[in-house]
Structures are given as C-alpha cells and as structure tokens.
Image 1 (cartoon, rainbow, N blue to C red):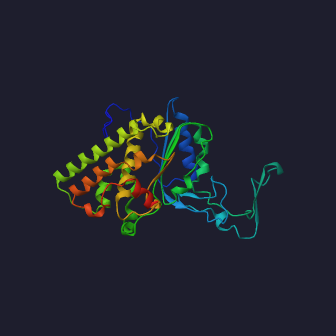
Image 2: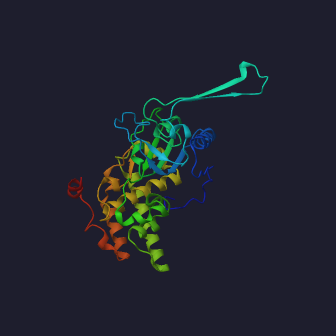
Image 3: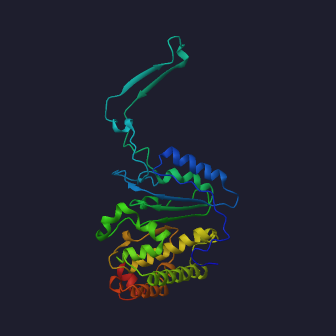
Length: 315
C-alpha cells in the first residue's frame, strides 16, 4: 500500500537518537549503524542543527571550507587560545619512572584558519558513502552539504532544508524546524504556515484526508515519471524513505505556492535534484490550493497553479 503512513508489516529498524552529540559520539554511533547494516541495507542519517560557517575568504574544498552544522556547543580550549604563545607541559608518571615513559605535550599555534573540531562537516560523512546513504540535513547552512561527491558509486540522496525563513515566522524558530515539521507531520506544517491554530475535529479529519491524497498523488508521480534519477528508486522501495521523499515534494510545493516564501533560499533542495514534473506539478498545485480554500486561507497562496511561463518568470 502506497498510502501515507501504512507500516503495519514493516519491521522496526535499529535506531540511534543523539541529542547535541559531539564529533566522537556521532562517528562512533554512525560507524556502529554502518557496521550493522545488512547487505541490502540503507544507512539513514537525519541531522538537525544550527549552521556553522567557516567565513573563509577563499572557499575551495567542498568537504570542509563551506562549513557544516553545529551539533554541540562545546569549545576546544586550544582553539579558543590559538593566538596565545606556545606553551609546553611535561607529565612524569611517578618519580622513579624511566625517561621512556615520560609524556611531553606541546601546544603550538595552528597554521592557517582553524575550523571548530566539534562541528560536523560534509567531509566527515564521506566514509559512510561506501554503502547506500539517505541523508537529511535540517539547518540554516544545509547548502554546505550540496554537491557531495559520490565517491564509491553507491546509491546516495540528500534532502536539504531551506536556508531562509520569512520574517513572519522568525519568532517560532526556537520552537522547532518547519522543514522537520513538514517531513514528520505535514498536516501540522500546513496549518502552521497558514496561521491556522484552531480546527474542529471534522476540519482536522478533512485536512488530514486531503493531504493523504496529495501525498498519494505525489507517490504515483514518482512511479510514472521518466525524469527521476534512477538512484532515487533504490530508496523508493522502502516505506519510510518513500514517505520522506513524497513529503519533501509536498513541502516544496506548498512553500513554492505560498506568497510569504519568495526565492530559492526559502525552498528545500535535494541531491540529485528532483525533476520539475514532480516539484512543479500542476495537479499537485491544484490540490494544495483546494486545501487552502477548505481552510479559508486561499489568499495566502498564489492565484493559480504555476505553469511554465510562471516558473521562467520567477527564476
């Protein structure tokens, strides 16, 4: 069944949930998950964190120069004091210890710009591209994870959040992410961007049913499209990942039609990029506009489904 949320026959996959992890924790648990994957398994990474920019004047290396995400607020004393004069400390293990077990540590000033060692960069994920990887980055610097090289030829897809948010929603940033809301609860997400705070039980059920129909329509479009990258179909057989892909398209379409979201920075992106017959589908647009009319928020959206001329004008 391709319908939204039908996972009755699905085995629950092994999961690790990390809250504000440092680099060591992320690497240890991701490596453990990587090791546990069966031959036909897929590694799924969902990273939600504030963005981190290196602010380098010259950004060349895609792997580290463009920054990443800040999963932990720890700071390294050596980095914070990198401008201090070099110091030397000697630690002797016992008075009668021989010189062979004397440990000497020397702190020296780093050469060139220093990157925060506790942040996660695209290059940190490269080793895990040895197996199929489904990556979701929810961050205001998700753009740093664009164009990751497929070094080992394994199926790989990344879903990246928008990097901008309309001013009207800025006060809600500390309460959660809009992108994650769309991927986990599209009904709540749609109501949120439409400022709908109070629904009757009947309205809620109608809204939920209509969004399920939209998700189902998007799923069918994936299967019918001849322009979808073949890599995506490797993940589409999995119910969880298929649902994320369909909800991603729903998120893009809603924000694309919403008057408050203007410009590419306000829309999610992916690698490989999804084709326009999915992202800019007229039938999906019509269904979203019908939903907005049901909730009496039609004025928040564009006048009609976007057609080719509209797309060219907006780009």
